[in-house]
Amino acid sequence: MLARTVQSLPEGPHLVYEPKWDGFRALASTGPVRLHSRRGRRLDTRWPEVAAALDAQMPDGLLLDGEIVRWADGRLDFAALQRRNRASSRSARRLAAEEPCHLVVFDLLHEGGTDLTRRALRHRRARLERLFGGVDDPHLVLGWQTGDPATAREWFDGLADAGIEGLVAKDDRRSYRPGRRGWDKYKRVTTTEAVVGGVVGRPDRPWALILGRRDPGSGALRPVGRTHDLDEAQREGLDGLLSKAGDDHPWPRTLGPAWGRETRQPYTRVEPDLVVEVEPDASVAGGKWRHLVRYLRPRPDLSPGEVPEGLAIDAEEPG
Image 1 (spheres, one colour):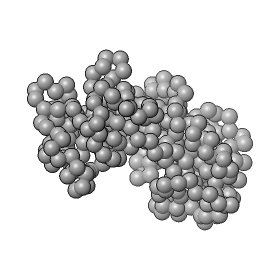
Image 2: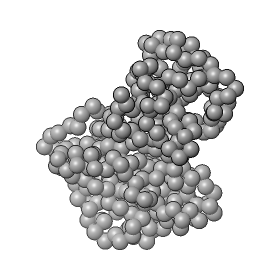
Image 3: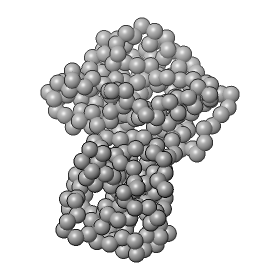
Image 4: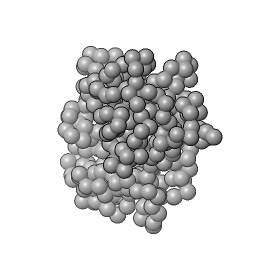
């Protein structure tokens, strides 16, 4: 089951709220234990510590829905999940000891071989809570849930620095409908600035922008993000503001895999003079904003030196 984006937090007598975890969505079955991605890819060999916990702690005949996460130094670490996802079975066993991960379970779809998907969420949640009453392995975590909007907003505000992307709102009367967008996701909207260091396409006809920020330690301009594809009005609004860079540009001619691409990405380097306002979310990995960011507008009134450093998105607006 999936979620659709909403612009405000919905409220109502039958709604419950959960943190939106930044991890790998996973379906877990027991008897025997299997972990699968939403698209059916096997995950148990890459997260053997989670598979072992399920085998030891859970009865046979379950199908659980949840998110594999890595919690380190007070925040979610998506980069560790990426390392694990690329690891061989042998390397995954080593990383399981060095960088242990956790399965946050938020739904129970089968129990004792019985299909529960047609039952109401409140019924499934009650059975899930009873199931977790006997779990004492830190690799398995019952997902948080509240019916109180005030508590949900406290989570929304207080967990942002920990990498929580937002909230998911669910109607506790509803059944589980695989593949349907029957939940609502409310994500943090924060705007900030970045320097345009490259474009997908030509400087006079960009299809997307490659964004840079200064490294807080070295001061070097680093590629940290890519925008969604620009629409016609956005491309026209950049007319005359971008120019092709010379050979002294600090970035390589292709960028490593990132932003949903599995291979190196060609692009056109531009002079890093233009500041733009963008809307990233809280998800970061490998020193970059992990998801494509929303482009808002050019900021020719700002200089690159006025742009916040690193990946901070909560800095006061310059100027």
